[in-house]
Length: 101
Image (cartoon, rainbow, N blue to C red; front, side, top):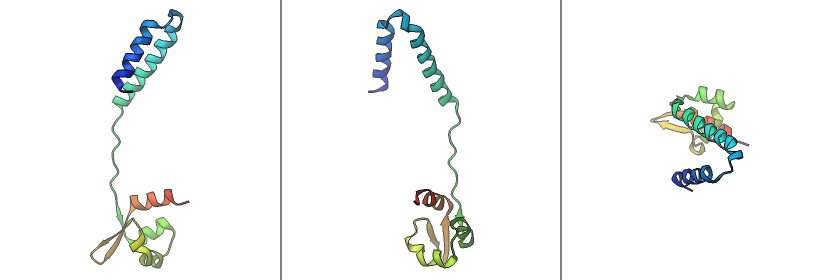
């Protein structure tokens, strides 16, 4: 159902609803209006910048050894090579930790 169809349905209900149910109907309409207004006035979420961590910082977040990260860096989705330097995405590590069982 599109927004236009939903609004038309609400208008039809307003025209045909029994008068004793109109106070509750108006309350629900007011709730919908206030909810939409709150969403419009809320600040847009600011995307967080990703941070590239060195191996020591990544080990601290993952609670693992440097050897573990060096040996498995090619299979870790959050590992990045910058020349010879091995870096790790903080957001990638956080996503990995939340998915891990």
